[in-house]
Image (tube, rainbow, N blue to C red):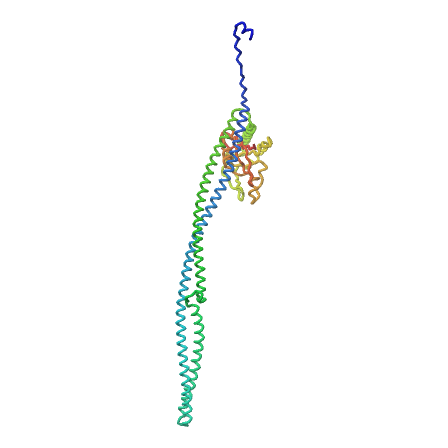
Length: 449
């Protein structure tokens, strides 16, 4: 270049640098996209499951709160009745106290009357005594008169005896009146009203205690009624808040459904683009299993082993005493004979496979995998839920979508209830089962992440 400059020539411009764009690895992008979609689906399924559980708990609490509120309302009404009865009792006690006071006045009058009777009996005694003296004197004079006074003497003796009897009777009357006066005087002292509370009789003191106790009951019931009324109002506020929370949870549950559908659509879009992903083997396996079961059912109809009417039977007859509820249909025996050869084989393709089952379009599982085809244990619902999954209708979101899907395949993500509070998040591929030109249901192939 220095030589060219010395000759006066300009150096040729440098050749432009060429850049080569890196090759786009569509498969890697699809796999990355699929992984992100799977993560999104898994998290959405987890969130949906938690929100669903929380919603059920909130609804249960709201129902319990409504029941408690009704009971509290009944308590408030009961408190009102108690308050009314207590007021009646207080009024009755005051009436009894007034009646006793009136009785005390009457008793005092009776005491005065008895004293008058005692005074009259004393006068009668004095008269009888004087009569006896007169009769005695007359008897003495009659004896002095001899035969002439004999008749008069007889009369005088009779008068003397009668006067003695009157004296004895009047003394008995005085004794009885004295005893009665003493007793009534005690009653009078107990029932009379005094100026000082300390001087009141036992009856008035007892009535005062009763009146005070009833008064305290009235006060306590009034306070209880006020407290229950406030608590009832608070419970109503809590119930309204819980109802709002339940609605908010239901709204959130609906939004998680949107997230879940988006993730599933993303997984399906990746699978449909023709690039093999982690879900491809399971999609192909589900489609192959659906084709095999379709052929088995078609052959059964063709050979007369079953009829189309029996194969599409939707009259699910409940199994008495089953918990969870099991049902029977006319194609159960056929499913038990044909399905295991396909379903059990799918379990061996990977240790990630959880189950492979054929469901009709209503989510009914006639025959599950053999490890879940156990007879139910009476009364053990938790064990039955986890181990007896045949003859059952799974008409939840996933079950119905898989049974009614008629596209080449359907990918779903959900949280499965294993019973006893155990849940696992998994993906499921569904492929339609057809018998001739009719859609019978679908194969459900579920596998772990």
